[in-house]
Length: 328
Image (cartoon, rainbow, N blue to C red; front, side, top):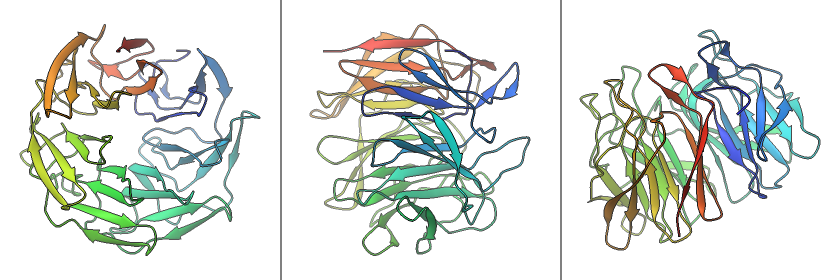
């Protein structure tokens, strides 16, 4: 890549190109540089330097929404749109009603973008961006407040599952809730997660269930416990635990329905390199190839029959290298 970075988001375009924006570099601090992997092309700078922000490809396939940031310990409520065709960043004139970092951004089936998670100014609000009117609309109140480093997963029925996250005092939540875009309201799931967690990862499987793995538990210890959310029962069930799972790991759904995991980092400063594959038909993890370098806060996308993973950090060093995992 043109710059090493961590604490950044990325989105995959419909043509498999990948956009990354800003983040943090050990050598220069908060970065003001975006790139497109095609294999590697600069896109120019955003109007605001950002890290811990979120990005979402809009339903039109031509624009990317970027929300909030954290720079020099301060958060803003600004947002921008990136035009894929012109490669120009434009500030959205309507500021978000709250400031957020470490939040989630989810494209809904109606074309709106749901924003939820850690909030600076208030506690239980979530909102969505309407690209037609370019306005921000608050949803009904969430059940839980704050929810730093929670996950948000779009379900097959168009609702959104939000799991876990940390409280303001860094305690892992075991609660989960569902956003219904037709009523613009939230409800708590029938059952709580089996393991409270934050800094974890989730991915929707081909059968509509959601695989949840890793993160820090209620004792602020690393957990390799895995569980599945079953939409039909609105409950969580246990599944096979992985060998390694860490903070800010990746889960990538493969075309054959399996899931590739890269292990992330752990609280002792170790960065495992063993990746694993989850077989949902028998609910088992299997060891697979090794990363060339351990990495935390990396990004991973499936491109054809390969998984492309890049950047992140290792022992305080921000990375600029990339690697592929091939599967059949």
